[in-house]
Length: 445
Image (cartoon, rainbow, N blue to C red; front, side, top):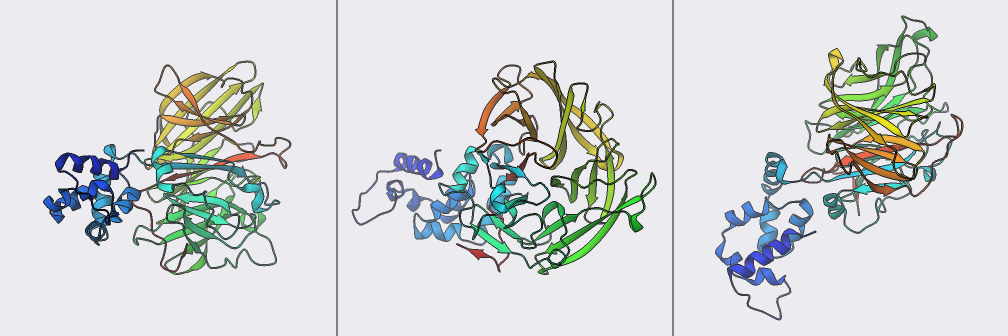
């Protein structure tokens, strides 16, 4: 990748001749006349237009004057504002971490390490050459993400210790122990969410979704379900316990795998699997702490994820640019093609969806086994499908060269009964213009 340093060097060579100085160890391009001609205001405007934060930090090491301008308290807000206002000129770096999904928490953290990492070119440049997450004190399981932050635990689903880290800045923060999970009775956490608090620059919230239950153990077509949630607020530095209710007219079945939870505009979304009923999306409004049931679109066409007469149906949800996407893949055993549909959620309160794409594709070459489908975190016209041990990116707008291989799983997935099968989990990260800070009490290396 051509960095802003090389661009400035080429610009300065054109502006004036370099005067070599054996004692000057600065980059050659910065020994020209441009730093003498340009005043601080012009250089400041140049620096806030640098394509990424790492290049800006590298530029700050060129000279004392550059360091002074880039370390100015006004620089980061102006840099972020410039990138937000001109997003078309600054591609959003993204990272996707694939790992096995936990089964009842019987295995240790070593069983759930990343088995595939996809980096966009911009994201690869931000992270540099260091190994991913090698700065943490022990092997961690990635539970959730929010922008460029990760929620991690050092143990299984029964762990009461949690960390939040920023892989770019290599900062991490240890949360206070969750005493609701550290008691003698083991509580299985079925879902994890990491939420930035918009009122504070560096504070966040962590939500842990416990296994839902009926009040007084009552079940039936009109029974409500109680969902218990423990919430950590980094500003307060402690956990609190909350509950909300929603209608679930069928028997509650414990999820074998952890639930994937996504956030958009203050609402948490996740798929709920209900026995003998049409699957649906649950939307939790964090401002009111109310749950709204979002029914799947009327043209979804298939019930559940089970197999009917040689037909298998898979689905997932994700967030693209603050919008909820629902993806469905239908596989027919007798055919070599798959049907792919993508919807966008227009209004969660009325379950209003719009169909964006409906395509049919051949199976990937030499790949027989479908593993999973995932929403692209940046481009709403693309999805990821994993066939066998390979990750493919599908462009839903192209008629030719519809897909390309993006990565390979380092470990194969095991398929057996419901207790021994592996499921692939994808943790997306979309990096903002400037790395998200961690609260001041965090550790850094």
